[in-house]
Length: 276
Image (cartoon, rainbow, N blue to C red):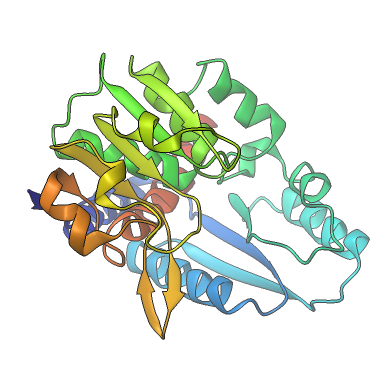
């Protein structure tokens, strides 16, 4: 059994990105659009700002009140699309319920869509035409590669079908010749599916939901969940009880979250390189 060290791998990626940024003839800049004051979103945005500054990428935060109008957000994103100094745009999710998430995302220029959520970029990923993917999904693939986990021909269960994590993870691992079962809240006999998985990716937002009864012995378990229970952060996997059964497991915190931020930096760089 091994516990993945997200901080160490993230530092390696950040160092690589910093080196590439120094070689560029232009400055890179990430603009983050934040609506409201969601506590988790505030933390994520601060982490992204700190990471950008660490590697020499400029950062701009655009705030909107919780009660803002959709047209105001769209107008601002269109302005950012036109600014040459802004090389990447990120819409911090989730949005307040009165806003149409899809309509706002589609306003982002695909050339600046760092989270790969526009139809143009997500469609390329779905068709296998690009490896450019949402940051968390890319981070999961990076973990498996760094830990030399075989993907080809392996059975994978992904629990959760969000556009940020579940769907793109399924696409990336399928492209790498895994056999992937995409599970969700309506999946019947979930335990029967996950227990056969060599690699189990969990992103359902339910604290400690996955117990050792759901996990195959010597499986690789990737826990994407971030939940707060009694003032403490925990994942979607019952870490203490499940880890003894695994070949590799990611902790929460200190696992996938570290990789998500690192891959965001890498995606900012990739957007610029693809323009050349």
